[in-house]
Length: 138
Image 1 (tube, rainbow, N blue to C red):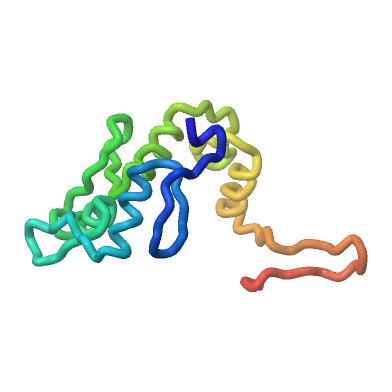
Image 2 (cartoon, one colour):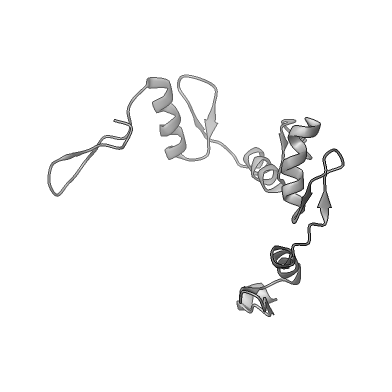
């Protein structure tokens, strides 16, 4: 219920940061205590958070711990897997005229089309001064 009320009942006595959830607070405390409860089984290396161990393990094992059952891609972080799963669930009604790629929104399609047509999308006109504005890539 704290999330909806904005209440942050867990407070760090060291730095003053506040947290909505107890597990977030506990995780944060590792930064102050120096506790590193997650260790690599291959190397003598320890980590404060499981996610950091997972990122470390990928190069060592060649296998990433989170895999998509739809496209078989593997990810080091569960959040990246969740983002990938979302792409499979969303309808993609917009299609590229040059290849079979599909998109959920027109800005993504336009960006992709510029790759196929090699159009430089970063040339903008200023309505106030009639000057041309270029990005750093020009």
